Image (cartoon, rainbow, N blue to C red; front, side):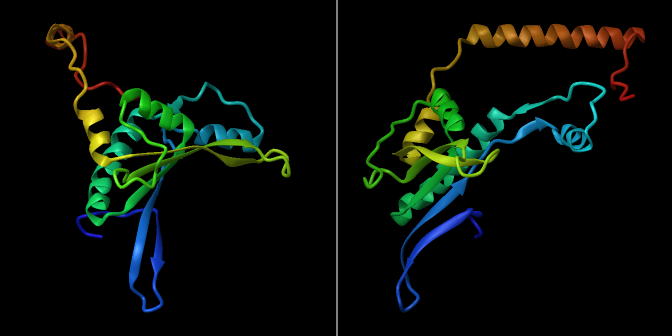
Length: 193
């Protein structure tokens, strides 16, 4: 929808005449990775060893920046519509988000002040299917778009001295690189071979 974007799912109460009475949106989020696990996957399927260790990892910051911004924005719209948005995420991701932003949470997700509901899950072994996993509900908590926004925006600022010290360290690296380039000891563009 223009001006809003997409949601993964919508649960709607639709009357017999086709009118939408109530609805809520559902956003699913896992966690993406940095690098690629594809070579490892191919090697595993082929039954061969890799020449070198692959490099990949969880991209925690990307999920935090992108997903939380999306929830705040869409939560704001749902607030005006007097509806809710449900964020379905792994428990580990939710704990990471809470560690970065200590927003107000409520277990009363029916409260009119709650317009974002977090439903978290973990994966556990499926006792009926060996080697497979199934999701298990862990947490159901709500918040508001404004509480989430305020927790992110109004954190205690780092000391100005720490920031200026970082600027100085960056300048030293830049000056050293510029001197190396001027002497012909370094190329400004790394060789990709």
